[in-house]
Image 1 (cartoon, rainbow, N blue to C red):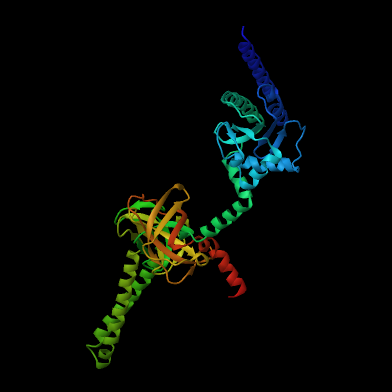
Image 2 (image 1 turned 45 degrees about the horizontal axis):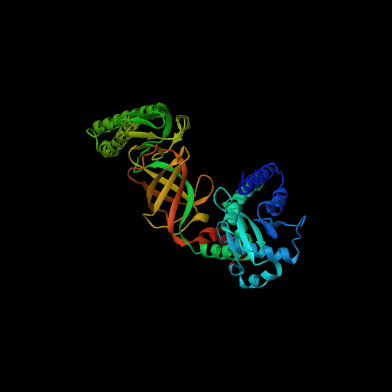
Length: 443
């Protein structure tokens, strides 16, 4: 066997031994010591240094532990920042560094140097190995150094968690210029145009419903329909108690009979003398008055049954809320709504009011189906606010549903987002705080 073959076998054995020691290493310092010192068994160099991203120069040949405050280590840390910009296992010279660093090269390093990068699985460089000497580096030595760098990088990846893009971005903005760039970016974003929008409680209500009012004053005796029940035209909705009306009709009938009898007697008396003739007209007027009262009582008795004037859905709260209740003439009892004609009723609090234009988009998020929003267009906005049932002063808004957005059931509630004009992001974010500040300071 030739001397060349013996040398290759010896080099292969040393390479396997270094690889095994790297796999058995439990700390970064162990791999760093092997990289800067044990590599000398395969490559002839004078000095070596290992730099790891986030940790700086962590190993230097011939030194147990590098002092980060030493001038040599500080110069190496700055130089590794320039060497990191390159790629691949390569030779390097003073011209590859900044002018300030290149002038001090001869004070710290020999003239011939090579850089071996350690890369993560994504290809990002997270460590660099520097080897320097006086003699030029050969191509076969660079190939062997590349093999060694892959062994060392594999071992370091197992001990050093390679930072992700979030950590790299965080480290970037931790520097002074990065913080300034972030501040400028955030300041510029405040002037980015966005569409103004506010949220308010909303519900689905019938559009153009027919209001069923009480035709007389009395007590509701019975309801014949349930809430949200479909009704047909002429169907009985509810009826009043007949007791008082029947008694009133009886009294009116007796009064009419008495007035008619008095008129008959006055008419007979008028045939005998002139005095009886003068009583005819007053008696007749009284009889006609009582006849009118009797007719009106009969009409009231006919109105005790209230029927649906058109088909639709009977919309009211609860039967028990009305049965036994005394209602006045014209009082609203229920509405007959068309299920195919609905709209969005929105109560916009005064504190959230913005400049609105009719026709602006509205998005409704129902509490029962928030993942499928409905869209519409603003059709009406009240001029003055009114106090809602919850005791909040709010503007009354109405929006028509867009075609194809689906018609939800009447009575469903949720939250509506109303869109306004384009404003800056700063105004969108700080509108409420500025309003509260102005109200507090009085300016």
